[in-house]
Image 1: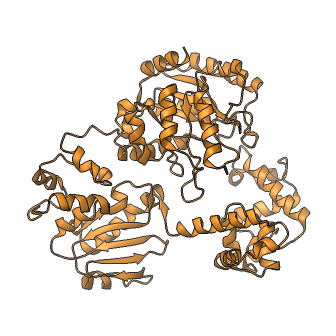
Image 2: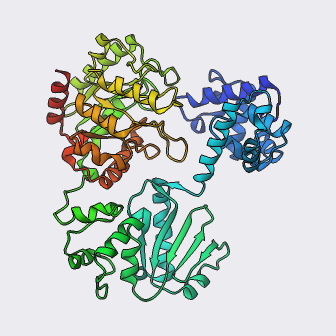
Image 3: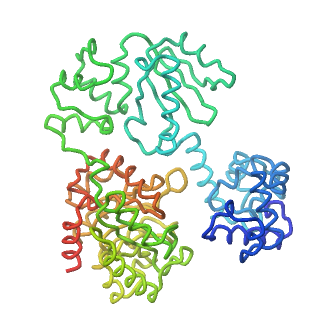
Length: 540
């Protein structure tokens, strides 16, 4: 409605209704229709719209609006920092109907000529569009993981289970997947006809030894084909270009004949080095390290406690007791509850009186729930000057403090470093949360000097979080080796805003494996007794 310049009051009433619905503690689908109209914040008009959605699965007024809006204009809503009113100006006044056109107009300095768009805004739009374009066709690991079993089963049905092998970036556990790759022991001439179904995938590339398809869901599928040297192709597609080139140069005489199609450990035996799992086949340096036995990588079952979680005291979905009981039921030994601090007003951050009340509740629950412990924590905003969100007297009441940046993310490296170093040097900071603030495929992190931050954490005994939310995975695993070298402990934390969020610890573990993290180097792998000792020594 804002894009179309329609009645501002009506648009706000829809926004208000949506806001109220989002905050409801009950499911509207399970609510009798007559009671919907009795809910505070839902009037006659919005109540009828809710019933329409429940009965038909769509909203007629929205569908009509979408039908008279160019698809490229709707796509602009994906661009961070460009709201509907600016999109209205771009469409109605500049007569631009696609993101590509908008980028071209920006490059010609046309955007800044319009009201509400300055030179800085124009450059931000350019940066946002270029980042958006660079990530089209890319997916987060869990998104691919969700569809991989069906794709694998389909390929096995077409070509036989003994002829289909997953490989590439997904096998290496990369956080962003551009293509799902398989080795298929069949020729191009045999593969292509089998894809001619009612809805065939689009063939993007055809090479002598591989085919690239685009599936209906947009995911790209690369099939390495051929009936000869299958074991060779499986190995050569299992590592990065850097790793494979270095390995092939060092060991040119590997004989792939007779090597099992399900186990490539014989390749490393021939090379005279220890086995390198696929997740570590990224850089050339791992080959030298494999001259000695590689350390045991951390496993999902090595996570003993949930550190960094949010309850409905701030922006979480579940009560504190529900979070604790679920964590215990799932085999965890403790829960670190770290709701947002007061500056995060958008997340109902905790003011001092709420902190006291939450601490009393934690003490009650700790007396009630046996064989488990809840730790008092806070995710304190790192303010613009680098200070934390409370006085020292308040900070001292927590068992541990996670310090994170949530506001004013657009800042040069110099400012980002000043804020982070100041927070790290605060004696109450226990863990540095999501170091760069990045959101994969959505938002670049603010620029930081990773080595300087790690050095500061080493000097101040601060743990660095590996935020396990698959959209964050921050600190980037590529920088963890330096932290381990400096004996800085990592903490794989789910940043869970619901019970369901506990599962994200697994994605943090997959990322940590790529950095060769052992369970002894991860804070959340400590059992309850060891973790209590850590907390007490850190507080002292």
